[in-house]
Amino acid sequence: MDGELSALDISASALVAQRIRLNVVTENLANAETTRGPDGGPYRRKVAIFGAERAGTFDQALTAAVSTVTVPDIQESEDAPRAVYQPAHPDANPEGYVMMPNINSVLEMADLLAATRAYEANVTAVQAAKSMATKALEIGR
Amino acid sequence: MNLLIDPTSRLLAEMIQGTALRHRVLAGNLANVETPGYQAQDVSFSVALEEAGRVATGESVPGRVQSTITTDAEAPIRRDGSTVDLDRQMVRLSQNTQWHNAMLQILASRFTQMKAAIKGQA
Picture 1 (cartoon, each protein chain N blue to C red):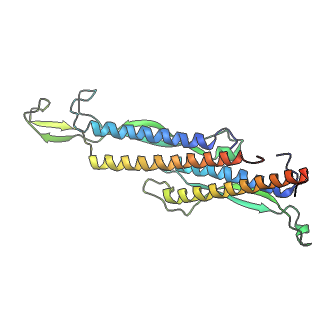
Picture 2: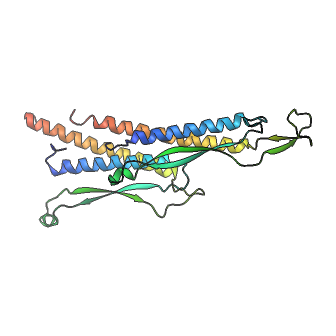
Picture 3: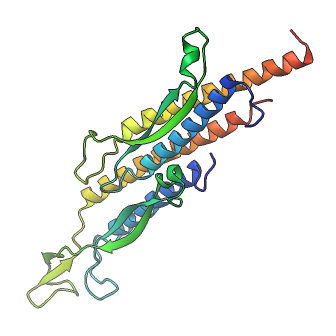
């Protein structure tokens, strides 16, 4: 468990990253029908980008090879919004079409499930690290 | 670890450090289960006999443990380029934890035996 980055730090970074992803998915689902986004147009789907981050300096050959995970960016999708014919809608354009966010609830739910599964896997890793540390305390007792 | 003067305890201690490293590598794989293009890693152990000559006399010679971080080049690649298989990583994590805890148990009982010997108990 020595080295600059402990097992708990690695797993903690994963829990943080999956929670960020969860928040992004929840925001997408909540705004599936938002026609007036911050820039005036329809809400744009957000995607959390994951990246691996090498830990330690390169003279510590063993610790440098272990990675944490980070979310370096939350990008807004460039997908075109859906056009729905609703002439009575206050945000309808002159042709009667409302530009709706291009959010597929099924895809977002699948993303939610994947994030939950990854979160649970990393919680198991935390439990394992804790059991190993507790066990080590029993030496010489 | 300077107090561990006998080779077997030293071997155990080195293996325990090896499994601790493996846990960190596997935790890194699990942390990056959703990172595109990430290559899953593992740790392999090899025990090198210190003096090959003594093997011929039939003495058992505990050696030194070498831990190497490896990347599996033949692992199946997902659509996003990652080679992390969640189920396989979870199984390895579980096996590694059990192995680590088992060796800690053995090391702990060695110390208990040493203490009993020092105290003169049977």
